[in-house]
Length: 116
Image (cartoon, rainbow, N blue to C red; front, side, top):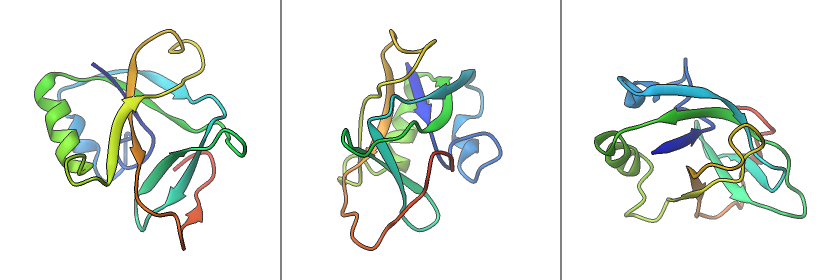
């Protein structure tokens, strides 16, 4: 499974160890239909067609065990994030690349720009 990391999962960031043993597939940029917010030490990606901007990140080819760990990290079951297909620019535009979209409130969060 291909996964788009745009924040703490990226190389050199605090949660990158969750990707140990997985294969780096390349740098990636989303289509300009998202915004990223600072949720207090980590980012939250939201869908925003009207005010979107390209978000920079990385694509990783992960196994099922890693994907399960990422779902726990992102608290998918608890409703913080939802894993879904992310709209990326080439060369990843035709592939099913999953990413984590923020589901919680944006009130009080500041815009985090295009790169975490």
